[in-house]
Length: 393
Image (spheres, rainbow, N blue to C red):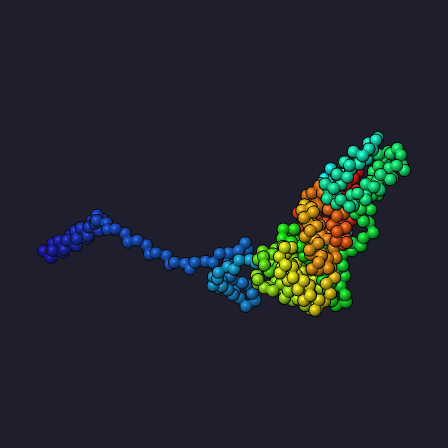
């Protein structure tokens, strides 16, 4: 009996173990839990081409991290104009001769054709006279030249083209004047600079001529200072500043409406302090009919002379205005002692005879001529180049 009960107990235990195994084998499966998230990495700084993070430097003491500076508003870059080196004044008129020849070809061809005729009667001489007068040579100089030509033609008798050209060249050179002193007085006097006063009516290109003259003098190796004494026209000082800035010439200026004489005085004083070679003072465009303004121009000159001598008074004339320009010139000559003429736009007129008439009326030489709109188209006047350009090759 006892053995029988033991066998039953063992059977029950085996049955329980079998049921437990089947339960574990066939139990329903649950959802798997998600794997734990990996730890987040700190953002890495951008690296340069060698793999070293920007802002991190390697040294003997280890790695040093440099934080970027806080962002700040970016200031716009200030443009510093490049200072130009202008060409020297010597030889400029030779280089610009072609422009002059184009404008004066009618005068030269006309005179050569008339003088080359087989028979020179009174009608031909009248045509020669008309050609010269319409070119603004002036009545007096024209008659003197025609009389001289008549005499020499009678002496020569028959004339070859070469003889006619030589005869005409000789007479034109006499009219223009090869013996006049056309030297620009811009030599400093010890520690005192030379002073050039630029005058003229509105619209003649006075401020532009002042700027071009500064370029020319800088090209000749001189240190130049500009005085913007045209305080009635706001754009004049700005224009002069632009000219000076391009060649490194300082400009003395004041507010619009300031006393022009005080600007001129300060310019000369600063020129002396800075030991410049030349001070060029640009004045307002004076209408010759306004007596008060002309008197003020005289005041500018007197005030300058309290500190220095005015070495040169350049009167700027527009060659295209013809005889009207002569009347303006005469009024200026009465107020200030004009020492030279700057004749602008000579390449834009066929009336080159204005050179002759203005010199005869004022008794002062043409020293500068404008032969174009470029910055280096202002040239010292050369009588022989001028006459040869008129007559052509």
